[in-house]
Length: 226
Image (cartoon, rainbow, N blue to C red):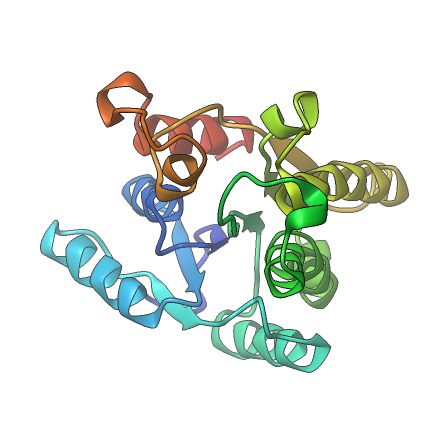
């Protein structure tokens, strides 16, 4: 990816997953620049190779584990983006962790910590670290990819449901605090689509019975003003 260009720069977390990789692909097809962030370095490399093989520009790859990253690691990431690209226009919080449907009080503590860190604490820390870059432009946007189903039917979603509720409240708080002069904050639920996360919750579903990740990615980009 060319550095220091005038093209809008998007950063996608969870970029090696089925939804994240589709977001990266469609953004590159639309002429945007893209930073692909994921804890799965091998998955990022495979995404890079598929995109290049299809004749698309290569995204910038940033392996990072949101589960274990603290404020210092997020600050270092922000410094890297500042020095490499000098800008950031859109941040998409697409990373998620989920293991299985289970009662909240039956969830192992390690599982709770990992899901909350990935789905709630990580997006908070990343938003804080990248806010100076996002606020610099005239059209900065922060997008939370949300799952509203577990809020309507909360039983057995455990930490994943708690994280989703927290994400909704975080967007509402940031939206009001930013007012008309700060970056835009938005929560987008792309609806159901086939993914490993969904299979963990509903293993009997068939891929052919659900919308594709490509359709979900298009919905997010369209609503985010891509």
